[in-house]
Length: 342
Ligand SMILES: NC(=O)c1ccc[n+]([C@@H]2O[C@H](COP(=O)([O-])OP(=O)(O)OC[C@H]3O[C@@H](n4cnc5c(N)ncnc54)[C@H](OP(=O)(O)O)[C@@H]3O)[C@@H](O)[C@H]2O)c1
Image (cartoon, rainbow, N blue to C red; front, side, top):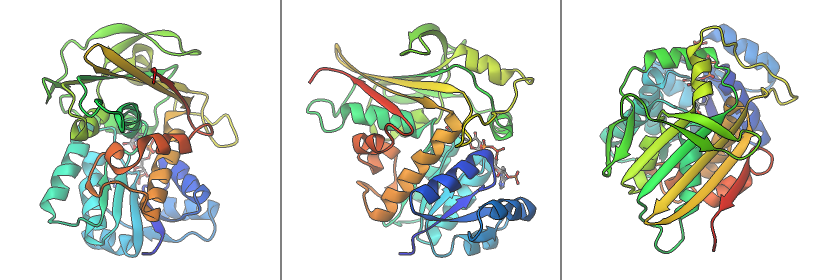
């Protein structure tokens, strides 16, 4: 199998981080997207990388773009517009598919559409391999997998602490595009999140500390529900971050370090409960867009190396050894802390 990784949406804010992360993984990214001028400008920054222009409305261009790729990484959102055509082209070409959707219905559609494509058991299709979606899923899996009795859990609570959220244009467009009712798991089933959204305080590790959070589920609910048979799964987001993205005056992220990361700090706290026992695991780091790149590049690397536990349409925690995956990103990209005895 050829080891090329096609990055669709390569010239977007997160796509550019992903291209750099693929190179750091020793992979050869092929730059793809719909705009030839923006592709050419990006190619100027990464001399020697191949460029393949393709539009989601033109399946022939997509088929030509994905030819020979081992993995297709879709960074072009709204994923409600791009995920199905890009995933379909990838799977038909025998390539693994990863995307970074935070949109719940896009992740659901990817799982559904893969099933309708007919069996391609030799490829993995993993939506939401990103900060929202995959990271909480890997954390919850790492807190449970391989421990006797923790195969079935009662409740998974995800709390996402952000000191600020400087949204990209893609985040703003995706927020407007995705009007679907947000879902949580209750009674073992996907159901609409309670309205008005639940509010509470959450104690994040320093430097974030105690923060007001509000119930706001993202794609992690869909991927967690795919494989963790929990009765209840919910997500909270720091209320101040939600105010940031609701405010049209909040600026886009600004690079403040050599890697292009913003000053934004995050902590993702996952609490898994089984009866009266709880396990808490936390990932802390900088810049939710930048950290998505090592997540998706690590996934691409593992798919190419065959370090994968399950193929087909799967969640990140099903596909990979979650604890080992998180350790590989630590400490450069994530600081992981585990809080349980034994
Ligand atoms: N799950 C997570 O944690 C996570 C993390 C980061 C980003 N994301 C998501 O990833 C997406 C991109 O975010 P970003 O920050 O990189 O935004 P961005 O800088 O605005 O980039 C968006 C990219 O998507 C492309 N695109 C949009 N609609 C397209 C379409 N119909 N066909 C082809 N290309 C299309 C854009 O191309 P044009 O310039 O040609 O429009 C651009 O390359 C958003 O949906 C965002 O929510 C999720």
